[in-house]
Length: 286
Ligand code: G1P
Image (tube, rainbow, N blue to C red):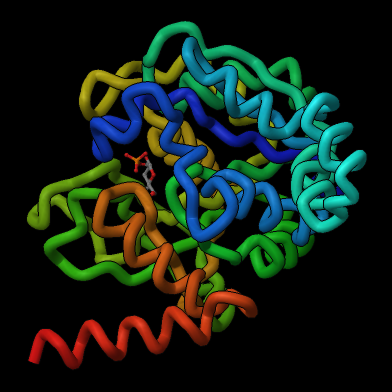
């Protein structure tokens, strides 16, 4: 079965980047010339996703507005003959079909996914978390096609970061393809079953919904997505890929800055000037 829909939970309060995120949703903080969330939507669309379901909350209207038409601005740009700007304004809305559901209480990531149940229906779907750019969906989709189970993206993490992630223990089935045996949300180093962390990209089968419905609050008193995936893993229905490609984290002030630099350097127009600027800064610091 093809994966057509992606759930993007964007209801979080963004407390790691205050005060920048006091009134601007963290998902709309800019990276070069686009909001972070647009990169993630583009990543999903490139992997074949056609429908994006945002799980939003109070004070996140601007997210829906970004992926909607803005006719007044479009008309002004059109009248002035600003073709490039007009295309940039229209692009977000043209990327996919968008809808939004609300998470009325911050009860955790698992609860946020459960809020999308009706919008997803009875089909497998992707989940993309908003604070990282990890282009690994194509490989995950291959694994899904073969095993027809939920699929996680796992990456090796340094010991000191283990307690920031869901951590998996696995059995290798093929090179870089694992069956997930155990999952622990944000364990201490002692509790961690390995150093394989779960990235914010998931392919999920719809039997996750009844599991989420009965999932009790876990780590931090929140309904954890990881705990529901663990139940699938215990049923032999959760696989993972070992991802070794690039993963840009923009969920912290430093991450936002380093991701901006990475993307700025890759940008065809500003990349060369930014490279020169960085060289100058480094020289001045010596
Ligand atoms: C969430 C998940 C965690 C996962 C992480 C990836 O945590 O709960 O299992 O490893 O995303 O970024 P969060 O970063 O939302 O606290």
